[in-house]
Structures are given as C-alpha cells and as structure tokens.
Image (cartoon, rainbow, N blue to C red; front, top):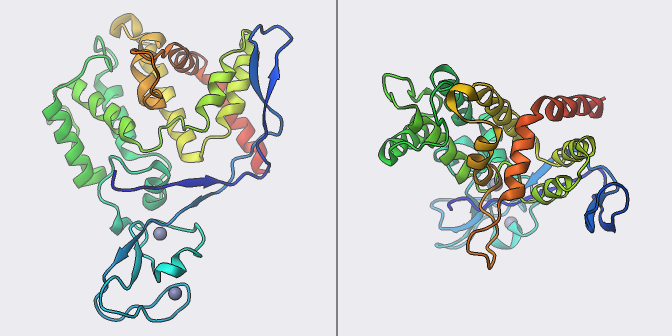
Length: 311
Ligand SMILES: [Zn+2]
Ligand SMILES: [Zn+2]
C-alpha cells in the first residue's frame, strides 16, 4: 500500500469500554457496555514523512533553518509536501492536510484523506457506480452477486483513477452492469480502513447480541456514532442504496440477506485470521442485513442525534 496513514481519533469524552456480566432479558454471558457516549470528534492525521534528497535550498518548516548537506538532507511528507529536518519531524503535530497534487488516483486511498482533499462529502466512485445501478440495474437478476469480467473492472478502475469524476461509466461504454458493481465492490474492498472501521466493528458485534430488537437497534445507532463522519456518510449512502436494491428483490432476487452475504466482507473488511478454515461470518452478515432492513430507523434516528449534537 502506497499510503500508510494512521489516524488518532480525539473524543470529547473518554470512551470507556467495560465488560459486565449480563442479567436482564439477554442471556449472553458477557457484553461490552459503553458508559460515556463518545461524540464525533475531529481527527488528527499523521504526516507520512520520507527521507528525501533535495535539490537547491530548502528550509525546515518547523525550526526555519536550512537543510544542510548534499543528500538526504531531511524529510518530506508524501501527502501534504511538508519539509523538515529528520529530527524536527518527530516534534511536528499530527496536522497533515493532504494536497491533491500528491494523491494519485482514488482506489486504495484512505477515505477521510480522499474526501478532505476533494472537499467532498461522498467518494465519487461510490456515487457514480450507484447512479448507474439505480438507472439500469435494479431489475437485473443477481445484481451485486454476479461478477463481471475482471479486465473490464480493471478498465473502470483505471478510468476512475485517471479521469476522476469525468470517467464515463455509461451504458454505451460498459453495457454489462455487473462490471460496474464489480468496480464498486473493488473500491470498497481496497479502502485501507474499511467503511465499518476496525474500532467500530466490535461495538456493532456487541450490539447484535441483544435479543430485544429495540435494544439491538439503539445499540447499533450508538455504536455508529463512533464512526468518522466520512465513513458514516458513505455507509449511510450505501445502505440506503442497498435498501432500494432489496425493494426490487421480487425481480432481482437480492433480498437483504443475499445482499448482506455479498457485502459483509466488503463493508467490514477481511475477517481476522483464525484457526478455522472458513471464518464464521454469520454475525457480520446478520449485522449488514439488520442495517439494510432497519435502514430508516437506524440512520434517520442517528441524523436526529447528529443535529442535536451540533447545537
Ligand atoms: Zn503531511
Ligand atoms: Zn528543523
């Protein structure tokens, strides 16, 4: 992976996760309980400094002194272009704001970085592919389950990386809708941090343990609050779309369960390696199925909460 980006999330409240034994209606032996609600905070992005040999005169952006020497005089951030002495770079805060000219393509770029650079709310790969599916794929049997030709998916990836938003994904160019869905799934799979982040996934799995539906949904809503905003907005957009796909399941044969089976590994990322030959994705699939089935309740409720938080 070209970009090694790491994020540290800053909460307004500390997130305390405590293991408690369960009583009440649930008969699960243990579950996590979040005591203090986390509030969506601003993120800090680390610079990606690389030792560089500079030509001409350069100054350190931290201490203001020359970068002395002929080779490897200092470091430069791959994402924003900041220059510093190697020593000084250790003291620079995580305030990297990526610059468009340092980003190549869109596939495999961390979502928050990409949206910050493009000053966008949603990744255009997702909105463009979804537009095509909604225009001509909702009645296609096995939509998202069937895969298109790898060469064509690769061609779409290259076009989106090169031409960006202007890439032509129309019917005349790609008649087979399954290559559009293939490109969309590939984009989501290649995100360095999956849409459902590593931090939030276990919270959602815990939420799924509640037998009581209302409790399960309110716990899911609570867990989703911990997603970074770009991840939350994109997930919400995808799940709303999948609900529209599922609403045509009488024709396309893709009900929420079938869609969840396809999308669990894509939205959550590959399962941790276990001793089991075939990892158990049952809860992940049930989770995505629940998100699709109760999309309105889960995401509309959360929008209300977001608005409350802003006040
Ligand atoms: Zn930087
Ligand atoms: Zn310096």
